[in-house]
Length: 127
Image (cartoon, rainbow, N blue to C red; front, side):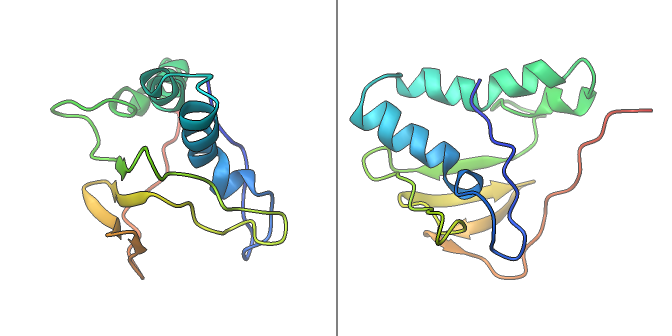
């Protein structure tokens, strides 16, 4: 699986927070050809969701594109996606991401973050 536990606090943190997934797609898929695009996408989406779904049933609606699944999608250009986050600028956005849809709401449109749009919510395991 491919995932990150990075957290940004007021723009400070590790560059993996903003750069993990775009780095995999740009460097390890496109440049190094260490993974196929489909293998990388599976490792970043479906596999983490499947790993958690027994404990967190809501994860059955993540990492999949199908009727009834959560409408969380990232639309990117595989020829230009790449990470730009650094230790000096850990929140620096990736290149090549055209659209991000969270819960059916556009949070990135034409490569631009939409201000004051916060459609996501917590996913918790039942007690």
